[in-house]
Image 1 (cartoon, helix red, strand yellow):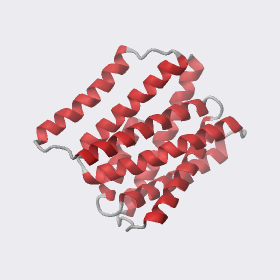
Image 2 (tube, helix red, strand yellow):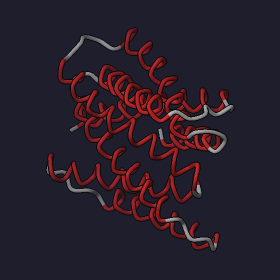
Image 3 (cartoon, one colour):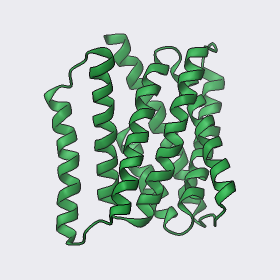
Image 4 (cartoon, rainbow, N blue to C red):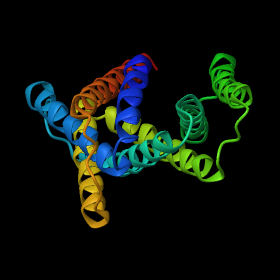
Length: 219
C-alpha cells in the first residue's frame, strides 16, 4: 500500500506541476473511482448503510486531502510534502485509535512517525532552501484530511470494506469535480501519468482496507 501510494503521488504530483493541481487531482480521483466501482460491483458483497455513510464521510476527507496534497506537490519539494503528509495522517489515525478504541500506539508505530518527520526535516535542511509557509500549511491540511479519511474508512471496513472505499471515492470525486468546475483551470497534459496515478491510488486504497479488515478480524 505504501509503495502504491508513493508511486501514485509521484506520478500525480509531477503531472500537477504541468497544469492545474486541482484538475489533476480530479482526474486521478475519477480514474480511481471507476476502477473501485468495478471491483465493488463484482466482489463488494451486500449493501450496508453503515459502510455507505462512513465511506461517504471518508470521501470528503479523501477529496480534500488529495486536492491539498497535489497543490503542495506542485509548489514544493515532493519529499518534504509527502513525508510530512504521511506523518500527520498517521499521527491522527493513531490518536483516534487511542481515543476511540483505547489502543495505545506501539513503540514501532511512534518510531515510524518520528522517522517520517525526521526525514522531511533532513531533506529540507539538505536542500538549504526554506519551505514556503503556504506549502507547509497546505501539507498540514492534506495530512489532517487524509488522517480523517483513514479513521472513517477503518470504521466503514468493519461493515463492508469494498463498499466503503467505493463510496468514499464517489463522494471524493464529486467534491473535486464540483470544486474544479467552479474554479476552472487547465487540465494537465500528462494523461498517462494521471491515469497511472489514479490506478495506483485505487490499488493503495484497496490494500489499505484489506489490511484494516485483517486487523479487525485479528483483534
